[in-house]
Image 1: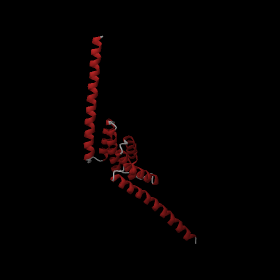
Image 2: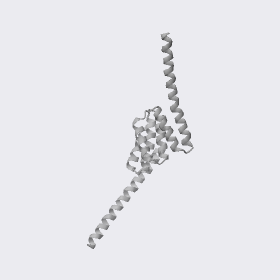
Image 3: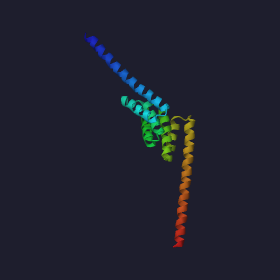
Image 4: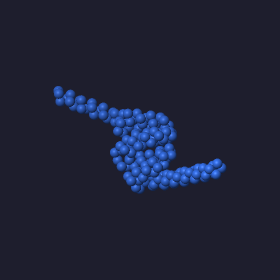
Length: 167
């Protein structure tokens, strides 16, 4: 009799674990459907629920970052991808997280940080041509920004000299 009760309790525990595992995947799937339909806010909510069911569910965390990016909530996307890039269990996922982190940082005009994120992504996956292209774009934007700042400094200096001549 004791043996039977033990097996029943083990069976119930296994069933509970399976139901919870299914819930996170169903929520992820529903979130993916909403995302594909362009309902990024609804998708983000479903991804959050999936993460609540299973806090270490990396695919839901990655997709949440994408949904935030699509809603133009770039700072939230940055936070999501930064966390995932530190905690991802595989180099492949870390590389993708760094790539998307670079995209999010570029949108917030944090170009130096964006360049570094793309470089990190390429260190983990040197064959990713999309990341290589984005790195090139970010570097060009950074160079252009530096040139503009240099011109502004020169203009300030010229204006200061002109002002001093007038005085």
